[in-house]
Length: 65
Image: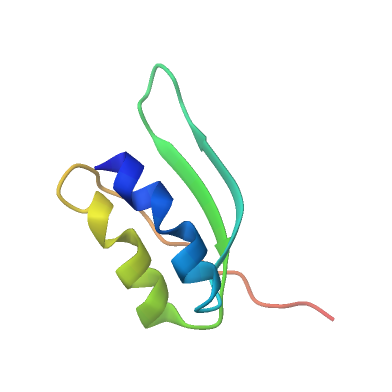
C-alpha cells in the first residue's frame, strides 16, 4: 500500500502538490510528510491510500512575506 502511495507522488506533483520532506519514525512507526499545495481537496486525495492503515494530523502554515 505504501509503495502505491509513494508511486503516485509524480501524479500529484502535476496537480500542484510538492513533497518537501518525508520520513518514518523507526520505533514509533509514524510518518512525517511535509507537502506544499494550495489545493486542500487534492491533498486529501493524495493521502487517501494511507487512511486504512494510519491516522494523522494536518497542520497548515500561512505564507509569510
